[in-house]
Image (tube, rainbow, N blue to C red):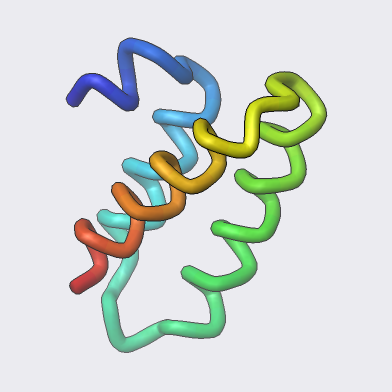
Length: 61
């Protein structure tokens, strides 16, 4: 939930990826790449990337 508050647009994408069937891993991966790209452009903080990615992995796991 904090990710949604923090990212806004990115949070929405994350939610979409979470809502999508977990079986579609390829799609989720593509979504993650898109999020990562946008996030890296908006925020140049490596720590944020790791935290964001970790959160996504936790949701998918």
